[in-house]
Length: 118
Image (cartoon, rainbow, N blue to C red; front, side, top):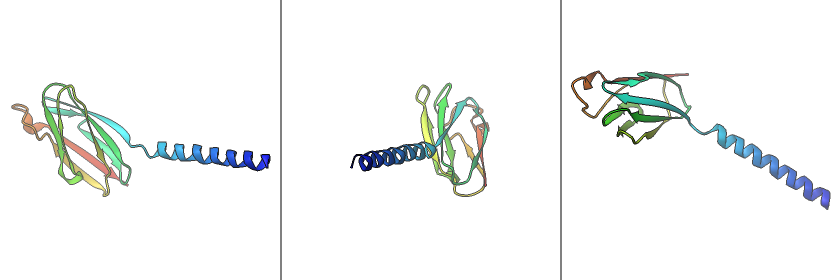
């Protein structure tokens, strides 16, 4: 009976470790993007289709936003308050974004591109 009990505990531990490692493997990768007058750093990123990521958006100066309509992204970014947005690209292509919060004379040059590959 003891042998059965220890065997059961050992198999439960293996399942627990396996489940924890699978949960860890599924956590989205975080990509930090800084917004400042009048650009995003980096201004382009490359993602893999069907691999979710979290974009951590940080404003270095004034309020901005990141809009990437084809990926469903529309996130305000306030100075001193990082904002996370989850992206799970389902199709391959180049997706263009921009700042959606007027931030001064160079606002129109604040563009961003997400390249999604297989």
